[in-house]
Amino acid sequence: MKMGKTKLPDRPKPPNLEQIVADLQRAEDDDMVFQTDKVPEDQGFSFSTMKSPSGGTNLLDLSASTLDSQISLASNDNTSLGQNENDTFTQEMEKSYNQVKRLIKLHSIIKMEPVELNSKLTKLETLGEDITDSILDLRQAAESITKT
Image 1 (cartoon, rainbow, N blue to C red):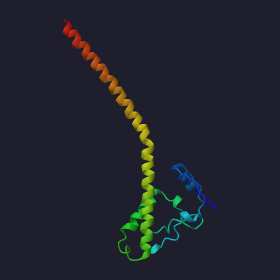
Image 2 (cartoon, rainbow, N blue to C red; image 1 turned 90 degrees about the vertical axis):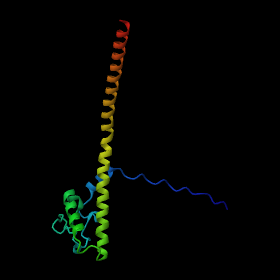
Image 3 (cartoon, rainbow, N blue to C red; image 1 turned 30 degrees about the vertical axis):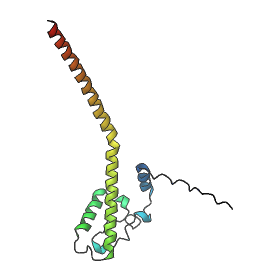
Image 4 (cartoon, one colour; image 1 turned 30 degrees about the horizontal axis):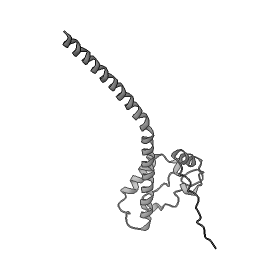
């Protein structure tokens, strides 16, 4: 009996930023992925005043500045840091949020780079033409001086 190699199917490509944003916008209020009700409130990271209509807190409803302020409050609460296992959950949540925030910022910067690079290229090409014209003018001036 001959055993052949089985080829596994290719992995799907990871979603791009637009697909991720579209998924986030389509998420329902009760989507467990975006709920923070499971975050223990005894460690300083509390969304208790910010509830969605379904009763839970939806991270999509919160602005980046609100999340930043809540995260900074949690990181400044030195009395509870390192005291129990829930701190690890908060720290990992903070780390993940900061990574996503940084990646989105980097993506927007990278997205603008081709426009900026094309602008710089156009300026350099214009400067190159100006330098070439100046060199030709200097050569003509030098030739006219040497002929006289």
